[in-house]
Image (tube, rainbow, N blue to C red; front, side):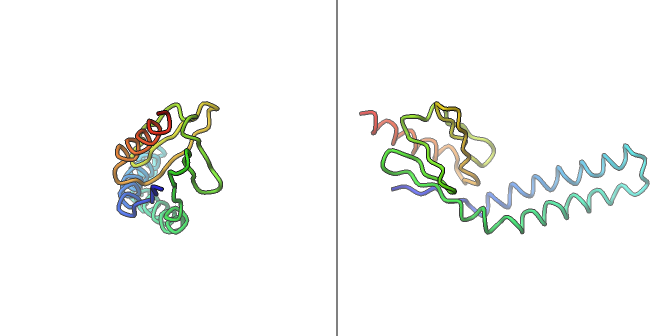
Length: 129
C-alpha cells in the first residue's frame, strides 16, 4: 500500500501564490473603481487568503489517498479503480485523476506530483500484466 499525504510546505507555497494574486487583484479592482485607498485591496487580499489557509489547513492535511488492491482510494469515500483511469496530469502541486466515467479527483498538495503519477502508472502496468 502506498499513501499520498498532503505536504504542508506545498500547501503554504500555494497559499503564498494565492495571496500575491488576491492582493494584486484587490488593488487593481479598487484602482479601477477610482478608490484613492488602493492599499486596502492588498490588506483585504492578504487577510482573505490567510484566513482561508488557517481555516482549511487541518482538514486538507487529513486528505490522504492510498494506492492498494487495484484502486486509488481517497477521502470522503472517493475511489478510482486503476483500470478505469484514463488520464493523469499535474495541476500546480496536485495530481488530477480522470476516469473513464468522467469523474475527476485531485490528489492535492503533493511535493512531487510527477512522482505520484509515476507510482500510479507503475501500479496500473502491474495490474494489466
